Every structure is written in C-alpha cells, then in structure tokens.
Length: 162
Length: 280
Image 1 (cartoon, rainbow over the protein chains, first blue to last red):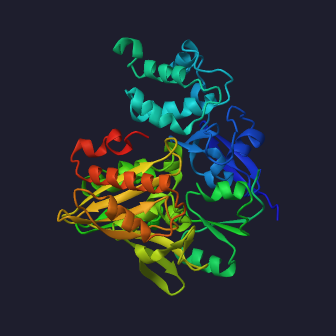
Image 2 (cartoon, rainbow over the protein chains, first blue to last red; image 1 turned 180 degrees about the vertical axis):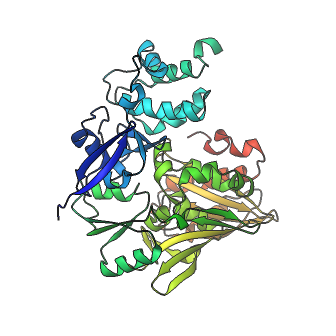
Image 3 (cartoon, helix red, strand yellow; image 1 turned 45 degrees about the horizontal axis):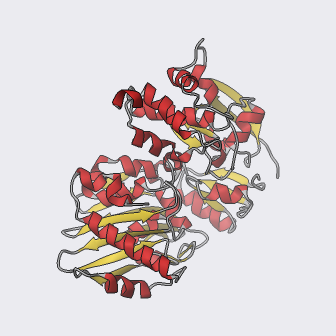
C-alpha cells in the first residue's frame, strides 16, 4: 500500500509538484523531495522545534503534519526568509552580531519562530520572547544570545534598558 | 522513526467520517495530530486508514449566545487563547489555553483532538469537566450530547465508540462563582505534574477539578474554610490517584490553593503569568 499521490506544495512562494506516500512527513518531503535542507529534523515528536516552519504565517512542526495535508497552504522555510534578497534579514544579521548560533541545528526553527513573533508583535519584551521560544530547544544551551539578538530587532536591547 | 503505511482520506462532511470509521474500525481521525502523529512516528499507533477532518469547515467555529459558548472541534488552542470574547466571558479558558504545549503546538492542536485523546495530564478535559460542559458526539444515529463528567472513563479512554467523533463542545456561562487555574510543569510547555481548576462559590464552598494527578478529571465539591488542607485531602481521597506519595499529594494541594488564589484576581492581574505560575 505504498501508493504515491501527487501533491502541489507551495513553499517560499514557489510551487513544487511532488509524488508522496501519505505517511511521509512534511519535514522529510521538504528535505528529500524538494531539496530544501535548511529545515532540520530532530526528535520527530514535536518537542525540539528544529523542524519548525511557517504554515500560513504561523509556526508549526513540520514533523507533526503529513505532506499530503499541506497542499493549499503557504509554507515558509528558513530559505524563504532571504528569497530573492541579497542580504540577511535584520533578524539573521542580529543572530550573527550576537553570536546567537553555535552548532546551528536549532537556528532555522529559532529564526522562523522569532520571525513570526516579530510579525505579530513587533516589540516583545524578554519574557514574551522566552515564552515564544519555549518550544525550540538549543542543544548548545545558547539561549541568552538568541534572546539578545531578538531583543535587538525588537528595539528593546538589554543594554539600552539597563 | 517514520509512520507505518496507511490509506489517507480527506473528509468534507462528518457523515463521511462516520461511514469511513464504520468501514474501518481501526481507522483514526486526524485533527491537529499533535498527539496522534508522534504516536504514529513511533509506531505506537498504526491506523489502516487516516481520516483527515481539517477540511470540514462546519467544525471550525466559536459562538457565544449569552448563555452558552459553542466551540467547534477544530478550534485550535491558540485561537481560544487569542479570542477576545472568550477572554471576556470565560477568562479561565484563555489562561488554560496558554498553558497548552508550545506556540507551534497550539497553532495546530485542536480542542476536539485533545478531548478525544483524553490525556489525564492535559488541560481541556479538566476544563470541560470543571465548567460542566457538554461534548457533542456524532455517530451513525446522529449527534448526541454527553456531559463532560460522563465522557472520560480513565487514562486515554472516553465513551466514544469506534465509529463516533467529537464535533464540538458547549460550555455554559459560569454565573456568579469565580474560577481559577493553576498548573505546574517541569518546563514551560511540558505536561502538567499537577494542575487544577478551582471554583469558588463565594459561600464557603466550591469545587475542584484536578488534572495530572489521577486517571481522569472529576469535579469534586469542597468546603473552603480559611484552613483548607483537610478539604483538599478529602477531595483527593475521592480520586484514583496515579501517585499516592506524600510529595505528590502536597503538590496537588499547593496547586489547588494556587488556583483558588488565582480565582480572586481581576483584570490584568488574572492574566499575569506569575499569578498562576508561582515558584515553578
């Protein structure tokens, strides 16, 4: 019963026609069929947040949705943040400035969650940022620099408020 | 790991779902899938047919008519957390919703899915029992309403028949009493070690509904004198506790106390994180 079915996925504004087995997770299809390997896969049980993508602008776990379910929705992966843009986004630049990435495994999920947060709430305080990021695990435990980077973009840098 | 093979069907009506469940008794309904897909990824669940109900628009509604809040099964946790009318009329649901998992989980997980999954440590089953809601269930004979107090049978077990699904829940307005919420987890978004909804009837009595401490949520009448430890202990004795160790009992009592304190708060303080979280 490994019958494949055709699915049109809209990822970063582009349409991809792929053949998928219903049991294939969106995270795997994004990586292996579409070839966008910026989306990372960690725990496959929704805990770690590495596979977080935006679906219709909201952060969701791509390991907890089947690719067949994603048809008709706008998917944004980390590659989409700089699609057709020469430079990093201000958030990505802030991550670089604050050394907010170490091994890089959690970075795509962190960037997408923080991008969605800043989209819905441009000036979150530290508490809100930590709450929003609670579903993204950094295995290097480098949370402080990640929060600092997001605070810079939120215009509420810690240095300034001290 | 990866899920085992299944047949995928996308439903557009509840009647389709009921028929397909009848045809395939080991089929599963997927709503948000935030509990089901992890189980499938680890092959703890291997349904032959997966019935996707996300295309049934009729299950995606929130309506309040002044006396009853009518929630569709497909309402996402985050939608409940963000809904202005729910925040005004049922603030305890707003606070409870904010405690469910993480943002990404709340964006996809649904009310109906949580109720059907019936995890004894989850917020919605206890909320429905505490607020004396009714759960709308549809099977082949049509829709029937089950009081939440009769819906949950034990760990991950409900009265749902194999060919039935939840279509919504109806929550009555709370009247004059005040309801508070508290929960403790090891980390933000983890399952509750203990949680409680406490209703203060403002006449020295009330009700407590715990979650995370027993096999299913139960709404228990309690006396609320100034010293309440005996009341809480007597209430706990009525439950099938999953851990009778004294430290777990003490935690359940502390959480009930905290929920009672929370019930007395008004306005912005009611929604303040530290009001509920205490020292966890």
